[in-house]
Image 1 (cartoon, rainbow, N blue to C red):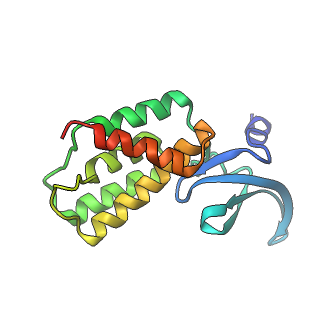
Image 2: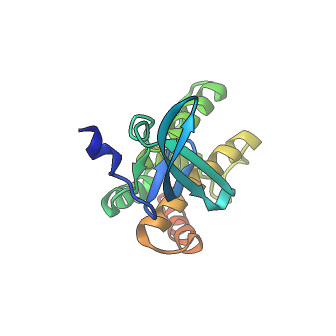
Image 3: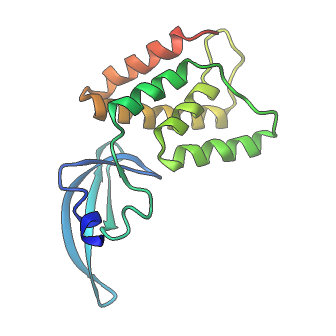
Amino acid sequence: MTKMKKTEFRPDDFVVYPAHGVGRIISIEEQEIAGLRLELFVISFEKDKMTLRVPTHKAVDIGMRGLSTPDVVTKALETLKGKAKVKRAMWSRRAQEYEQKINSGDLLSIAEVVRDLHRADDQREQSYSERQLYEAALERLTREVAAVSGTDEAGAAKKVDEVLLGRAA
């Protein structure tokens, strides 16, 4: 069973790491850490100029996953077309929920945050923290849409934008 999990991801695979979004496995290496030999995925997040080392046996437990299927991407884009669902809770509570959704790594949850925080030009201004959360969610969504559809980020951003602008106000 554990052997199966270990080889699920291979070098050059795109993966989604919950707290950082889409990265690419550049290698699998062994390192000795505190006297233990560990096998690690070396994951590069080019856009953030960051490299992460994740123990292979922990990857699935921490929520690392492969890219979403085109099906899920389609559902996520459909989610964007929906009407924003904004709870009446205090902003701090909502912000916390949005952040949890973004860091869950779940594409549909991330799409919900984009949908709920998106503002058309004629709508009220966003606060700084709303904008930050919106941009973080939008970036995660766009990167995964790009990776799944094999397009560049600009192409994916255009696609997402068209959906958001075309939705019912």
